[in-house]
Image 1: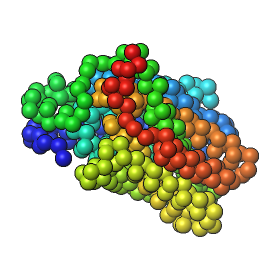
Image 2 (image 1 turned 180 degrees about the vertical axis):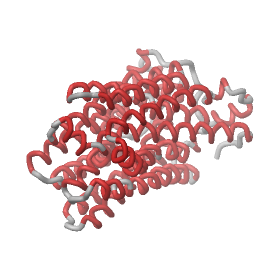
Image 3 (image 1 turned 90 degrees about the vertical axis):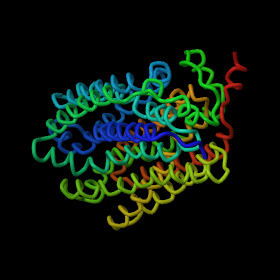
Amino acid sequence: MASPVSPKVRRMQRLSLLLLLITGAINYLDRQTLAIGNPEIRSELRLDVAQMGYLLSAFSLSYAFSQLPTGGLVDRVGPRTLLGVGLAIWSLAQGAAGFVNGYAQFLYARIVLGIGEAPQFPTGARVVSNWFNVRDRGLPTGIFNSASTLGPALAPPLLTWLMLGWGWRAMFIAMGVMGVLAAIIWYLIYRDPGDAGVSEADKAAIREGEPPRTEGVSFGQWLRLFRFRTTWGMVLGFFGTVYLIWLYLTWLPGYLEIERHMSIMKTGIYASVPYVFGFIGSIVGGAISDWLAARGHTPMMSRKIPIIGGLAGMALFTIPAAFTDSWQLALFFICLAVFCGNVSSATSWALVTAAAPPNYVASIGSIQNFGGYLGGTLAPALTGVIVYNTGSFVPALIVGAAIALCSALVYTFVVRRPISGADLEALT
């Protein structure tokens, strides 16, 4: 285990994780507004199911491609500035969506939302790398990643209440205002260790066991990451993780209403339940990773084991969810699938901190997330098309399960060793 740090560093670690958890929850609440407002928005703007699928995918496509430059920017300018700016941009786009009059305007708002949200999780990976020792990063990563389920868990009751009380447009505007306030708080409070008056002894304890840090990452250095099979394995592996998670994230309210014939109010209650399990899964995944590391597994292997197990479990629980006639059993299996998916997702972000040198953490994390959100882009659009043409969610869920199993195989056989500083320097 790493050397102990001072109480001051412990406080800063907790504060940093709290801020990441809050901003991450807002990040995912904003993603959920379109899913929660799905029936009302389709009715008012006269959109069909396929068009709604394209709107849901517009966010994830712009988010995916924004990942590519974002990681390098985080590694160059730092988490404080980039997340502060990104949070302000996505919140303004979210508020603007409350004023749209048609499909095209909504599409543009979702694209800008995706661009603004891009720094959130690469920033989280870099903050954990900056404040925690390499062998103690699994649980902190699980905590900040749990925002990806805390937000969706809060979304159905909170956003349904806003929408039923004041309309779907007010729901978007209220979330935009909340995000702007959070951006101000983040920028005023968060600091990296070098700017927070941390002692040299504490810095040494944080960096114990990792290679020496260097300044920023140039474009040429960033490009070198694509010459390693580990990078491509993380891209393809995370594709399947995010595909199935995003299928549930974007279509679960619609699935419960269309396939299981629930009312909007009932959906607002039950759609949040799987994300309680997901929140727990994210924390459990991070804790398992640190437990494996403490018992002698390498940082890479201690991350890979829960990733692979989580992907396999997510796929296997999705299959009975698709075929059961009972909505109660379907919801139970979806809860287990979301739990496993977030075990995998949390440890995928912990893998980022072990797969490359410290000054490349946000860069490789954003590249991995790019692959993930190609899956996130495909999932809602393909699901919408499948449901539109078959009248059922069953084929869409089976496709998602098959993709998740393929990603488990990729992590098993392609992601084998970390990228070292020496590997990168050898390419110069």
